[in-house]
Amino acid sequence: MRTLKLARFSDRCVFVCTFVLLRGISSDNLLTPSPIGAGRDNAQTGKTMPRPATMRKRSPSSARALPSGLVILYEDRDILVASKPAGLLTIATEAEKERTAYFILTDYVRKGYAKSRKRLFIVHRLDRETSGVLVFAKSEEAKRRLQGQWEDTAKTYLAVVHGRCEKSADTITTYLAENRNHVVYSTTDSAKGKLSHTAYKALKRAKDVSLLEVRPLTGRKNQIRVHLAGIGHPIVGDRKYGTGGDTHTRLALHARSIAFRHPFSGQTVAFEAEAPPFFNNLVGDMGK
Image (cartoon, rainbow, N blue to C red; front, side, top):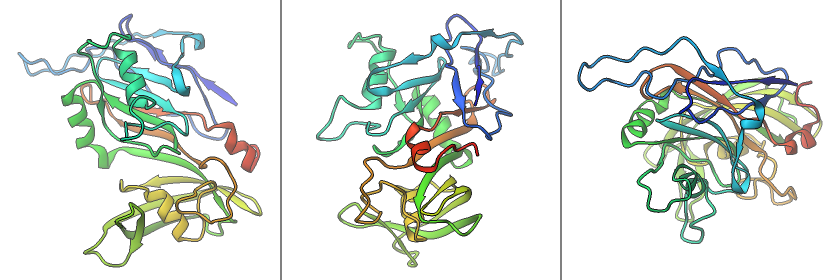
């Protein structure tokens, strides 16, 4: 396994953690962080501030682990990127207000001071059962810019599915709709559903399970789970869309990486989060 050390530019840029890449996954073109303030639009001149050419490195021990298993991958004045564990909500529900990624990270940026005006803005969500990379904005404008480019944002997931996936790669295309019980399903009726595309390729195939790299080309609710179940390969541990006899305790779906243009510098940044050990338990060494 290889360890990729990321960097920070200024003392005000809190940190970038060191994370472990899965063997066999290229680390080319990964994050080159923007310093705080670099690349921001100058309100008076309309020009963009240049980025400095130097950077400072920080040791792996600087990585920040927060309550409930959250780990911050990167932070600057405009965005915060974290790795969310399975079982943690992204935002609050009627039944759970505080044990959420949003609540915990908001408390972090406020440094525990409830009256602080600092806040985070939701850019996207991960299902409670899904682990992996999650992006927050630190202003309404950063949120608007990130969501405005969301269709061009590259998102990659890892999924372990039931059965040996015979196709090496394919793209699933259906219309997705949601019923009154909040269950998403595929339909051929374009009037009922939204056109959705999910690309996948097989990374490793065993007798009973397959490890897939999945790229959602559209962003519908439960899209990956519904599409993979629809081709006869439900995700391991998916009790909502999977088979009734699945006894696994967690969903084998992980948001592995995300790449997008920084909302102010315009620089392409990319982040990866290591897959949980649960994946290796299912398919063995994922680098082989």
